[in-house]
Image (cartoon, rainbow, N blue to C red; front, side, top):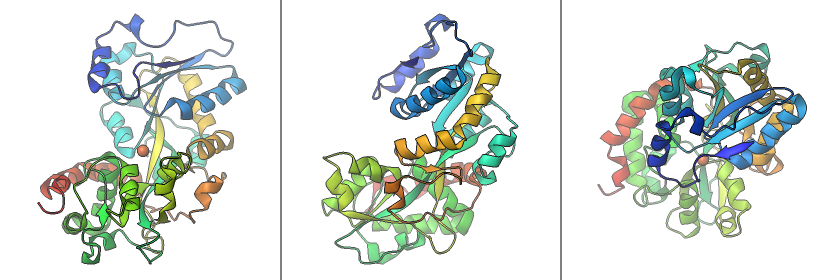
Amino acid sequence: MIHSTRGPRAPRARARLSLSLPLAALAFSPLAAHAGGEVNIYSYREPQLIEPLVKAFTDKTGIKANVVFAQSGLNERLAAEGRNSPADLIFTVDIGRLSEAKSMGVTQPVKSKALEDAIPGSYRDAEGHWYGLTLRSRVVYASKERVKQDSITYEELADPKWKGRICTRSGQHAYNVSLIASMIAHKGEAGAEAWLQGLKANLAHRPAGGDREQIRDVHAGKCDLAIGNTYYMALMLKNPEQKPWADSVKVLFPNAKDRGSHVNISGMALAKHAPNKENALKLMEFLASPEAQGIYAQANNEYPISSEVAPSKVVQSWGKLNPDKLPLEEIAKLRKKASEIVDKANFDAGPSS
Ligand SMILES: [Fe+2]
């Protein structure tokens, strides 16, 4: 059964409130008799993506999956629940949230040959506290009309030739923090700081909105380049209002010819006190299997983590992703530093500050 404790736009405060509710009020249903038992999931990922995956799992194994969906506060909720937590698994996006779950002590290590075979080492925790399930790249969307070049590097975004022509969301958003952390890894702290200053100077306006709003602004002629995650292209193409935004841009995979484009993951972690550990392990292995990887590829147009499964047709139409090989653990370690240089550069104040 799928439960939602909060609406998609519910304010943060409600997540905090739920921490103080008695356990009986938690969103999982009372244990119903079910042939294969149950598994309980805390998910930051959206119902429309998770539902087909858990349905395929239940059909295959007879194990019932209960899901609590939220937009924030799940790590804190796990920490507050401690040993009494009903959660077996955490599903989330971004290396930041996965590594945070590990450092908060709400996960436990998993050793599984099936997971190690399916998931490359750079996309999982060396100790097994988290595993990546899908990849997304942070790419450049360029105006088809006004940008002639068909390749780009992240470094080039700081080139003065783009002055007043680049749009991005907040530098403090997890997606940009991870990208900036990768720049620290490749260029050193001083190099990344200088790059960020250069990028800031090239912004068309103050960072605001999500990734899609930046592409909207390219379509509107307010900027020529936007920074965004790959799957948003597919989402825009499916949305009648946003399709013209998508049609106005081409996808440029930065650094495709050298170190590769920055990638991040969505992933999973086993909760420290998982009451249904065996079932949780079965679900983890199922999610890394070709069957589930195919569902991820089609449902959300992310890149499967398993090399056995091809991306969806629309994703393939943008060209080939050459992912940066930098282990995500390295990025996780540099995120704090990245966030600090965003503040230091006063990045979110925009170009003229
Ligand atoms: Fe996103």
